[in-house]
View 1 (cartoon, rainbow, N blue to C red):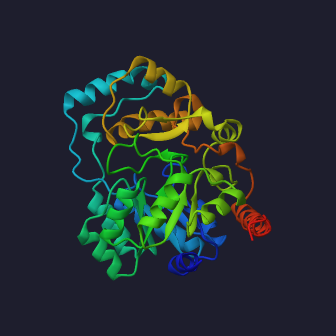
View 2 (spheres, one colour):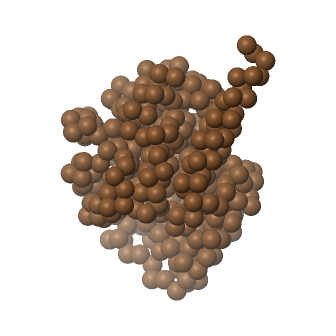
Amino acid sequence: MENRRAIIELLKIRYPIIQAPMAGSDNSEFVAAASAAGILGSLGAQYRTADEIKLAVADIRSRTNRPFAVNLFALNNLSQPEAGAIEKARQALTRYYDRFHLTPPTNESIRLIDADEQLKAVLDSKVPVLSFTLGILSAQWITAFTNIGTVLLGTATNVKEALALERAGVDAIVAQSSEAGGHRGTFIGDSESSLIGGLALIPQIVDAVNIPVIAAGGIMDGRGITAALALGASAVQMGTAFLTTTECPVNANFKKAVQTHYGDDTVITSVFSGGAARGIRNHYILENDQTNSPILPFPFQNLLTASIRKAANQRGEIDYTNLWSGQNGRLAKTLPIKELVENLVTETSQQLKKLSNAGFE
């Protein structure tokens, strides 16, 4: 209970819920609506330039005076793929470029946005909360953000990562279980070994660290929130539940797919970005798995497929884009964010009351 109150005070939110960052599936209006509802809205800024981050932050602030988070990748020691590897991966995608009448990206465009420039943009913008995944920020950046009062949230998929994040000085840990949609946050060990279900992961991390733990993965309603709290989490982070809200900018076919597929329709795949991520199985995934197409390492493959995914989304052809979704998407509802949050609060309160009369007194 103390940690739950601590996370609410730390993040300055009304309810211990975080709208998960979903790069490519969010925008400023969406994030602001989440924060205005009393939870922490999060902007997935991994693929935005420094100037784009500053503009997005300003836009969020123009829509709400509530706290919000910006999320970035903490990728370290990435090396540019060789030209030959880029060409092989690009050639494997020719049929998709042709399908959507696209000009394939050049080698020069397969380059990462400067991570230090992104971080400086967040620092200069004095963002209330910075969350990060796929690694740990350098000590220099952690000190810089701590000095200006920015709250730092790191992502862990196993206990070793949680301990490393605590030692690095983060304020709280997002425990990403195997049920979660989108990219796996693993940075110690391999992602396959770190596919740990929430029932096992959350209490292990809670017992291992002395800072608040935020449960993420498969949480869709008051039942899931109650379970996470019972396992020792101080708050929850929810992504898939917000994908089908009226403010979410993803296309209608994507939203329908989330609500009509079961958990066993989702898979961990690297064919879109080069990194392990959970999404709904579709034609693109099946075709590339069957052909064993060459794939660039994450996130360079993401740059190669960006125009394909954008064109497919614009045309509503969800068989050719990434449908990042957790294993519990069928529970997602179509309603405004404010109403979703109100429902979550009511459901959780009801579940907690039920458990108080469960016969274990």
